[in-house]
Image 1 (tube, rainbow, N blue to C red):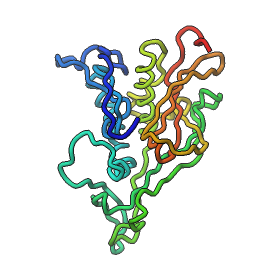
Image 2 (image 1 turned 90 degrees about the vertical axis):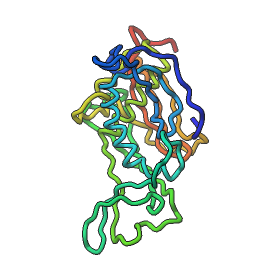
Image 3 (image 1 turned 120 degrees about the horizontal axis):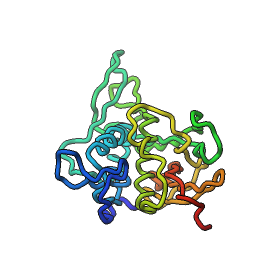
Image 4 (image 1 turned 180 degrees about the vertical axis):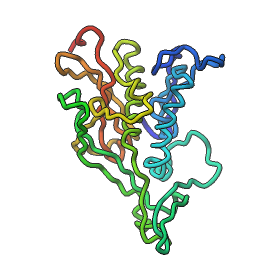
Length: 268
């Protein structure tokens, strides 16, 4: 998908794609909410209409906003990725550092900060390679400096730290994208594996479902890329969604197991 491309809106689903509810909430006659596959504030252009209830929206918003307002906030502002709403004030982000020997935590304008895009590199999802559920396979990270014209430390600071990635919420962030895309591609013609993880409130390792391609790939012309493919493991066919955020900057490709085929292996 390209930055600033028009939004594609699918036909109404009529039920929550995470919990199956047909009501937005018990005491509200509103229709179910629309769900962007990739968040609109990250430049997402594919929307599933009437596909999320209020409770699931709130749960998703909890982890999605954490990622969008920390590790991805300065990069998306700096790159001019389409925003959900027009700016009403100067974009600022909370930073930690040392000023005159004192530890401080302040909000500073993004335009004054060094901007780094940091994303994890992961090994394949455990379920595809028979890796134990509780064993993660992190291979490192790719870091892109997006602001070579700025000093590495903000003026007045003697040390500075960028936002920390919450790995559990980042995995949920990827799982939500994968589940939405699988629903868009397959409808009800698969057995989903991700809704319980997406809705979870307590951290739990799910690197059996969430992984990636550890190899470095060349940059693409697209802002983000999504694709779905079938992979076989232990005589089961799994729907695997490939997610590449900021593909135009050569960032990592993630593999998320969205579910498995119903009844039998798909042809081919």
